[in-house]
Image 1 (cartoon, rainbow, N blue to C red):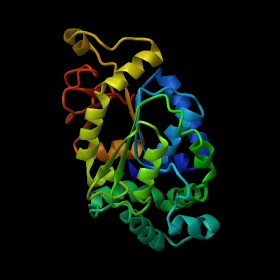
Image 2: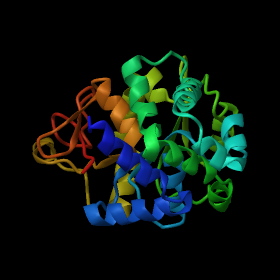
Image 3: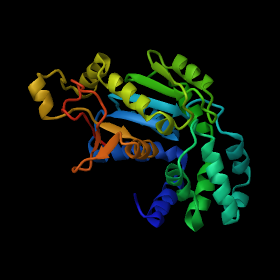
Image 4: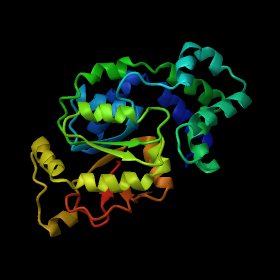
Length: 292
């Protein structure tokens, strides 16, 4: 884990980015990494970001997995709606009140109460002279125009889409899962029982199992062939020598899955999913999910 002061600085910087340009930064990052057609996983506003990257910035994905995404209006719980109107008041709250409000807000996003360790990962970046104003700044930037701009394009996906949604999500009702699935032709919808908005905390194994099965489907392999003009249908020996499966996982999701023991950093700076079943399409025996 990063030292707290460094983590707070990174969070403050990230929260200062307007929501409308995060997809542009994401697209530039994919370009920098040289990822032509990755498997992309996005949660919450990370979902909106990767949707915008695909539909507005025309980034090609091998597949897209959306986990309780911000994708349809209206969205936002009562606290953010109120805080948007009074950013300066919330940014100036006494520290002890901030330390009570933020965990209580986050606790509403899970079905099973978080451990102290897990809560600290989510809450502590929002504390202190840098973190507190940044926390409310990013909430003040919530604007439904960022999803309104793409809702009309949900009939034009160029990759297979899977939607995972916590049945007990109190931040974004599970009703939106069915509405979103109906708008994305051919999408796969999986409702995760006993899980809230932060599914990666309540049911990380559901994400890994669903992703493992999804990544191996023939339509994903065919999509990769069409998108980047290469064949993934190789003999088993060749497939094991290197993987064409590149997976980009948004930050909070990656942190939670890693802490749960599902993801472990490799020596090369990638991420290894050590609970995935063997996937003939994603090559390596250890089934590497690459987050470069």
